Image (cartoon, rainbow, N blue to C red):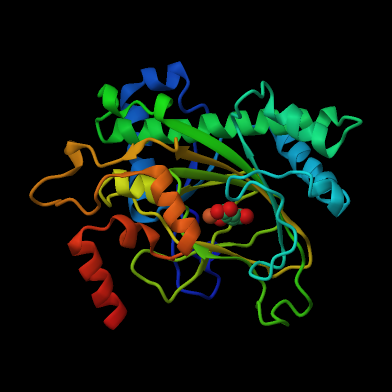
Length: 345
Ligand SMILES: O=C(O)CCC(=O)C(=O)O
Ligand SMILES: [Fe+2]
């Protein structure tokens, strides 16, 4: 099923964001129906190749859990700044971000799903924010991050199935993959919405650097994407109530030798209500290599990127914040030449 173009573009250029009901996808009985499972996997793969993102609903996350998460985020961001500032980490995008001139409406936290010496990361984070405890928040964070990580792994499984790569042990992600969870609040910009020079931009245009991102949100829209090969247009992504959005990142684009599209996206704030969102970021472990398997490279698909270590790519991005970090860091001559041509045109 595809969301009608009008719902996703208004009077802007119509552009369709695929929408799938994944239901119980990934459960044994679904996989056992080989034709149906393969069809689902192919649709997900097509969306990741053409749009680089899709919306979906799933049986795995009950409404109650989503409501608990949204309510928990309200409580969390309402805590005093001094409390929120206790969440610090040497890794990029983890420490509490409160005041920042580039993204003045955004507040965020990043929490690694696994941390050395910590048994229960949800418990550890909650204890720093609420020394007296907040079992409801701990439970929502723990369940939501676990379920969204499962969904992220499901998407990888579906892509591998669609590419007929699922039986090749070298593509099994478990020992090379990790994840982190982000919690975000976007404040309401001054009225009217575009009154200051930030023009309601909640999060600048970017591609995700990781493998796949899954985002959930409260009832306030704001995510926009740039269709492939149309860098003059921004299309609002209307995420249906109760749904999530999955976004392909640069590491997956490089791994697939450019078949999968890491879509540029941003957040624009237009309404009068605060936006809360939360995301599960699947990514290669720091030391793992990102390299296209031989199945993706042939005469018609010459290699676009050199293989690289994920941590090196991330350090390059963090130190330069280049919009086209993947092309500059790992693009082989053809990619870099194309980019130069685009810049000239
Ligand atoms: O808050 C959102 O919906 C988008 C967040 C995002 O794109 C990111 O954190 O990379
Ligand atoms: Fe993003």
